[in-house]
Length: 299
Image (tube, rainbow, N blue to C red):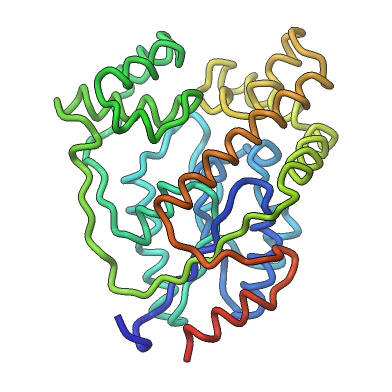
């Protein structure tokens, strides 16, 4: 790689670290759209619970790869790559740069490292059977059959657990043994956010999500797609469902959501340390350090 190769800027960090705000500043400074790499923001109607950029933020800067499908139409990593890679290439051809933003480490690594996931089509009947079994059975099942893949998937992540089992049963080979990588023909600058007050940021954002109507959003989704929708078992939505069902108070839901979010952020930080090599920015609220690093890579 040399300085004439196109540049992909990847802004990563755990949830609630300030990626959206900084991404807007970088995008405006460079006159670039934001390319979303958050696996839950790919779905329509899931706005508050995924901390999706607001309508005002999307009006301020154009965003790609938001609202691609309905929540009951899962997008595999391979399908995401097939959509995202041409999007990145278009930006590189037109502007010489592209800006990726998100906290989904595997999705980011797949794009920036050219990871090639297994070419196994979705298996609707199998997914239905796995949903009936429940995540409490499916994740231990994956641990027994493909411990390498299971170690990279959170025990509560039903979507990725089902996909790994789907690949295993459809192909007869563990997902962890099928992935290959082809390095893309562009440079990558990874910028990382990991603010020291992340715990407080998570608590404040969780409280705001419930004030803004997370329970109401969850109610609409469950009425339309059913309460057993796998995406409604993820952080925030799962607790909101229990508020709707009467098994949790809103105060307890906020507490549990905040706790689960902190645990998730810890896993994200571990992934980024092991799988990426970002330039960690000291202050997520300022553009200065990011500008300096980007300018160095543009020389």
